[in-house]
Amino acid sequence: MAKVLVVRAHPLNQRTSRSMQVTDAFIESYRKQHPDDYVEDINLFNMMVPEIDQDLLDAWDELGQAKPFYQLTNSQQHKVTLFNSFTAGFMEQDKVIIANPLWNLNIPTRLKAWFDSITVAGKTFKYTETGSVGLAEGKKILHIQANGGFYNGSDPASQYVKTMITFLGVTDFHQLFVEGMDQAPDRASEIINVAIQKATELAKTF
Image 1 (cartoon, rainbow, N blue to C red):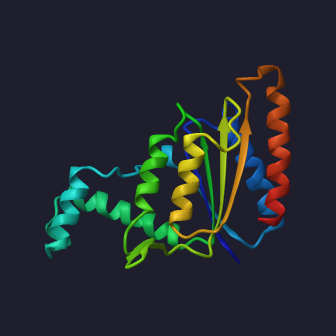
Image 2 (image 1 turned 45 degrees about the vertical axis):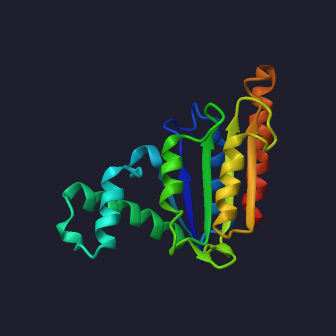
């Protein structure tokens, strides 16, 4: 039995979000093909994702100087605990599906904050004499992204996701794009249906 994490980064559901429509199709097909796997499905817009701010930076500095955790402020304790839970949650998974829209050539800020929480020296990667080494090898990752235009993976958002996942040591990485709906609105329904078919097929072997 595999542990699977679905990370959604869109405030809207499948009725209005193209990325969520394709993600739903993938998950539905995946559950049918892998009924024994445990799937945790979260939406970053329905929870607090701690950003690296003064609270976190000060807390890490104080903890590094051996200050007891209970002596941190309540805000610091809360943010450190949340941040660490996202780090641990990622490392516990066998497979991760990341789903987001392309907003202004970038990923949503909530997703950026999540990536910060899973990119932690000593936990998800380490420094060596020859450079950094990812510690998340063996995981299987799928990135689903909806784009209004046609980019074929050349946009900054998908390049960022690929770079970060590779940095963490993941080699089994897949991308699925549903794109061009705004550039070719007359083909929008066709584009989405094709992406849904691809997602349904990919789920069978993922």
